[in-house]
Image (cartoon, rainbow over all chains, first blue to last red; front, side, top):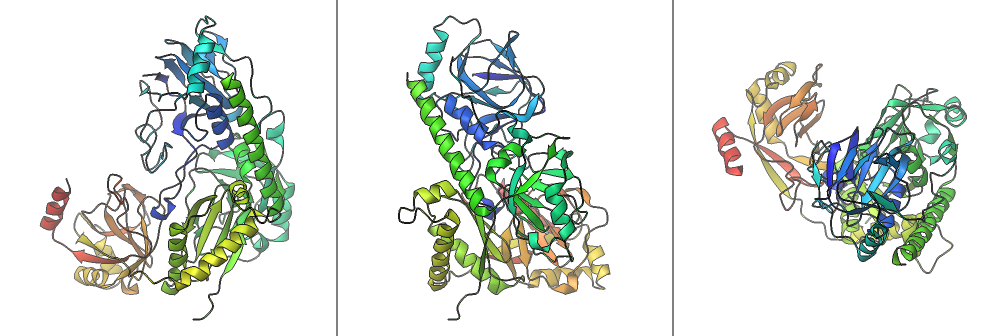
Length: 334
Length: 242
């Protein structure tokens, strides 16, 4: 055993990069909402970057460590503490047996990711450790974590093992962190307040002029109906020029659809594969991770970019992630 | 052979959609199915997932991986590269021998506690319950796609004589295996869930079973026949399963 859940928090579940290739039998992709934070957490403990992590939502859990464990926390800031001492983000942290880590509610962002060296020892279902909450499979027993759940971690990679023993050799009380950390990420500074970049959706041209104008010039607010399936927004109403007869068509992560009442919904990690509402826009993948860090009452501005720009931003982000990975691996091997 | 008509549009920076038409019919479905089968057999580097709908196939890819694997055309966008690839796939898929559709027989115990709305469906259409059972079990249905939840089939081909609107008050729980009617559609619920369909019967088969080597009983392109069974047979098949 390695982790014992003392308090589960609002919604803590195991999520990895997602379950691909099974939408044809109705199985959603699921996976981490902020995939970049999930990948960074894994890199920091020497895991494969798509390994399962704990996705922590709005109100954090309390976790007891029942073995010495190397962890890393990324994403939204929940001010976690062990023995009253703040546990820093964005770096490897060696936690000693018996330590109790308390996450607070979310101060900035909405979701944190906790990776443990070796990953979580749960059976992959259809090639993924992600929890498919509504169908009750994958992850830990197909559900979010509950009080007294015991989570095993797998065998850490040699980098992870070395880092754990190096940090613990400093004679820490209950935890010890690496001196180095990842500085700049997709969530740094005031980046969360920047507009969400979108490309035109396949039904964009059918919206009336006023709606197109409003969508990009006014402010939308995240409602309380914002979860892993989708974010319902409030703000100016959006209408198509004429009623559209749409046969259910494919939707993806970040698709922004508009039901008849006129308020947009951004589809997130647990979105269904087809839907029948007009699609005004498509949030770019890089910014979907930022939407995942928004919570109810946060404000969103949308900015239209071309598909080519979107693709360029995607590629730049992947290069940035690759460079971070190289830098981390160099540190872990030292 | 006539040249196949289709359009390709971007779905953001990580996907594109290939649209074969704008109506629900078996010929358009065949084009959708041919392409998706071809993608299954020939996944390309950077392919993440595809989605089937009535009239289209959507392909989702990782632009970074797509570009990294395309050595000859660094200046092209991933969208252009995948579009070219898909056009070749469509041309090749047309020439592939058509697989014979798989026919799946689904035993259904109609009426009573298994299909509490069968009388409503019969009355609504001025039919007897026996008529509803005969009409529902005489058609052959085409599985257009699986979606909504794991294993849930979108079936086409229901006789309009038994078309019935959804219930005004949706049920909070519909038992797994329930077979129902909603408007001109019929389908079966793989898992217990709330819903507004008119329930006319129940199958003892699992429409979705994680432990099975093929978890979904039905797949896009399959043909379905419903076979009426007695409550005794229903119980027997249910116990066999356990």
